[in-house]
Image (cartoon, rainbow over all chains, first blue to last red):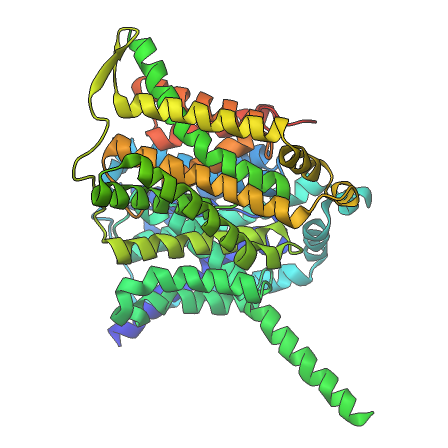
Length: 287
Length: 286
């Protein structure tokens, strides 16, 4: 049972993290290659707070707010650039975060922070907390997607210039998506720090940014269910694939490549295509 | 004297960056694809360079094999991986390319081992004095090699029919095609030349460090992306200047900002600072 609890907790955190990026990349169409930085900001912030003796809920909230605040500042700066420029700028933000953390002694530098206090919850209770938050974030995502703001995001993702011409304040909505997404990543980071209870700069590096982007893309950009499924599968895949651990990353890269090469709309796109095909063959039979 | 020494070190590193980034810019200018897997060819070029030098004792032969071999592999990557994705949104090719790069790094690790390989008898390790500064022959060779190769590329693009056709295709592919330019061939040539240059950079880095390892492409890969953005995406001259500038800034930054930021972060701090002031890159238009 303990194994399943560990597995589900890791899955839940991955789902929150992936859904947070889905707000930015999926809904609003802004590619980020540095999302792990905000995950890291939340983790480091929450860890520092519980290490100084303050309660765990406060630490989670602080990680959420700090990541969101820094995310907003980064957003104001980086949303001036578009498309490929934005992808590279966010990648730069990720490397900058690592570069700064590595040189700070009070953040443990290269060695990271160990001995992060326990959340005070038992393992099953912590898992429940993670899963409840993940469900809440998923509900929020679905609600947001169907709200007027979801449609605005959609129009920005689809064609920024047209959206602007229709009188939509594009920069403002991009910033809103960025603030929400980075804050939720910070929340996921706080949970991660108190789940593993050890963090170091490497856990929030470029590979992590790519991993979370892979979850969004493999699931199907913008599809909440697709992203949840992909996050759940991809986060535990390394554990299932222990027996081929030497080929794990190879398989990961191959998967990323194959999905983009053969089904760029991800799993959600695949399902839609299959449904559509069965529907058309159905009406074809009638005629 | 320290300043001059740092400047030279920076220019050596900048030449490496330039050789990698030029290929990326060629690809970006033509296809609007951020070709992350480019650095995989740089790494493989380094491996081939070391293996052939160790087997035959000839560095020149190693370069002569590594460059065209990687050029052909570059064309093969374009044909199989990017060509089918050209009509898709840009992130599709970008993520496919990242996946491809991860695969390549893992394959190098599995095939050549995780610890990397070195020259059995490293060539060009003597020091020579240049204007009062001691440089390794390998460093000097890197600079000269960079100048010769990029100078050759400049001649090719500015003085030959293929170069003219290539520039026309970058400016307006449809118009170029209407004038009888074979666009498919131009793309092949660009991938070939860019990948061959990356391979030469790989061999040079192998010489400088006397080591090639599976992950040696990661950091240059991301930095080269920063460089082509700084250079204004797709602009050859801008890329060249940005590469050399970054090499020099890193050399000085490591000394003067070392306890605030690590070396790799300096490049990106510089990138972000520039983009805030000029969102179109240092030399981009409009």
